[in-house]
Length: 329
Image (cartoon, rainbow, N blue to C red; front, side):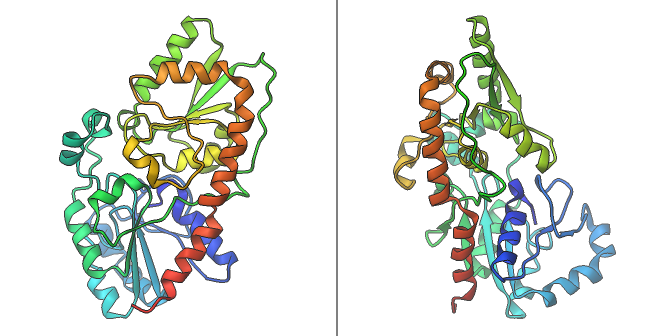
């Protein structure tokens, strides 16, 4: 399994506090930023054979299995029939390039990360994992509304979870003299449109603005929170069309957030989303306007925090999950 944005660890900790024992498990070292309760460094078939006794023991210890991205316990999800044979509940939570169809995206949308992408982040197991999930999963979840078109109609949108105690509100100090720090957290610079943001920041500097980027990448999770807290504004992705965990975390901190929200997806979100939409072609003007309008930052920050408390609170997400776990199939 993968720990995308520390999601699985955030959820497992919250579930423990609710009296539901839960452990997060990471399969490989490249499974996402964050921590885990169980770490299995399965890089190849030899590793799988080496850890086979431990792998075999895991299904007998738990009643519910929740898998993230495109991995279950074994690559290819060949463990799913065994889990169901044992009477286990199985859930999949898809997060992005594990299900996104690049051919469809390129054909339908003017702005998209697939056109920029050269890192081949698309899951090679995409079709088979979706098919296996539909056959064996009790429920299928997805993190952002843009993924709905790639999944079966019965799939359920569950917003990304944020621990509001870890991401506590910080009121912006509007002195007018400080250097403005703009946070950006690219898991992949091409897909996130990082180059367009850096060009916009460079142009702002040339026009006399005292701004600097705070690039949050390749950091341990604790350093991510520290770097995010040091920023004044946040810019998430500029190509994909929906906001992710970074936007939610920055809103929780009370930071104004810029992110490209596709027009057809705006109505999919609960009312009150305070994110300022910008794409690769207008990021300079949108960012310049926000930098010029410091008097709006605190209100945007308050709105963002309220929105995250309503939509992304990990405790609310976990209560929804616990209902699904206990449902009769």
